[in-house]
Image (cartoon, rainbow, N blue to C red; front, side):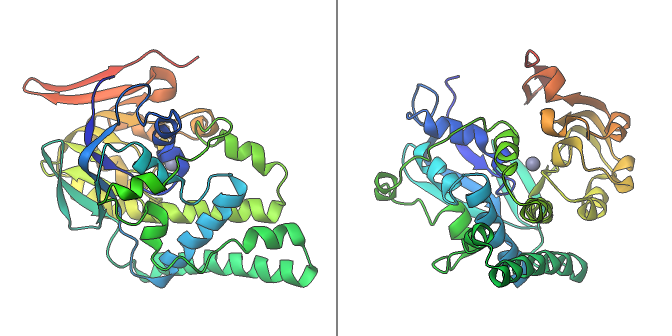
Length: 325
Ligand SMILES: [Zn+2]
């Protein structure tokens, strides 16, 4: 691999969506034994956090839980971006209605919206409330372990996007201050996290699960302007109708399934695509939805190996690597 990249897109701040970047960062060279992965002046795209206070409150709590339960520091993503960059990085938050260019292709942002509707925001509010209830219970019962975990939300975080994705990377001075994250264990999918959770209280474990699912409401969904390629990220089922209405009149070439192929709702069944790709490993494999098979040729990375799709004058090429052992 000798390619360098001028654009980096992170669909949402879940470690299973940037563990490749963490690996590159921890290899010390920022690019697996070669030069940095990202060119000087590269753009780092990520979802904008909707302006509802619940979204911000939920993400702070997600960071707090992940810092303790997964052992990934809350700054891991931003440190990894810096460690993989040859120089300055421009960070750009995205929301529905934005139009950007990725690898020369015009791309539309379909999700998240600037403001979540009442149903979504009350769902997030309920999750925030369960976190705070659990914290209150822990305080009352003097549960030290639980309190330690729940007290991790830090007041110093003012801007949730800065906290999640780093401040700005315009200056190379920043690079010198940052240290690449230290990784332990296997980050592939959620295995490392599952391992740690065995020692964790049930209440905390189910709270983390619920909050993690809630954060999928905030995932990026992208489609090329010609509607031939669409990337559903970890889009929650409640978002599928919204997204499908933008894609349903088109013949897609490649559709990246939602949440590793495990989220599917009837609204998606009207879509047509030459290929459907599910990026999935053992923890979620059993939950991949066969309904995607009816949309197009459904390739699962667990079976097919790493999948590369590219566009040429003669059409879309999809190449699968060897299956993982
Ligand atoms: Zn995911």
